[in-house]
Image 1: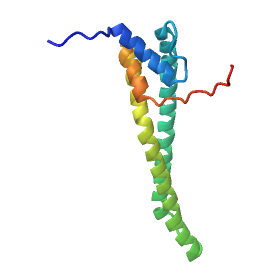
Image 2 (image 1 turned 135 degrees about the vertical axis):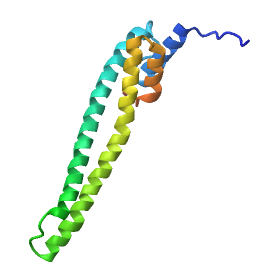
Image 3 (image 1 turned 90 degrees about the vertical axis):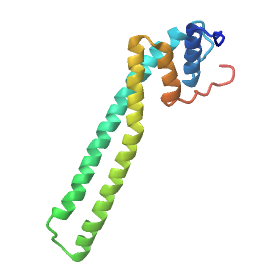
Image 4 (image 1 turned 30 degrees about the vertical axis):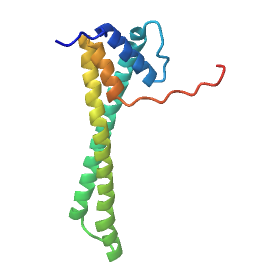
Length: 152
């Protein structure tokens, strides 16, 4: 039988709260790290969910518009000179393809962030603070620490 861990669940949760505060540029050595970290985490999760939904909606709209433009090029009547026809038939689909690729990249980065934010929100609602803080430290991108002037 393995020896019991000297870490209690509360001490691990406080440790993760301190790591979360430090990863977000805050002071980790506070008296009650959970009281400082949990409201900050709730705000960050709400903001992350809102921004990820906005990113995904914009990317989906851009991808659908680009696909429509690419498809309409082949259905549009070709009036004008041969140069205009060649530009229309070759450059417009390439621009549409570039927008589709960009939208796919945005979706690829925003979808996991939204899924992580949802998991954190569920963990916070169920009271699983350790899991929520662990997901936040390892799953959400951290913000760089703000530069503090010497003597401030």
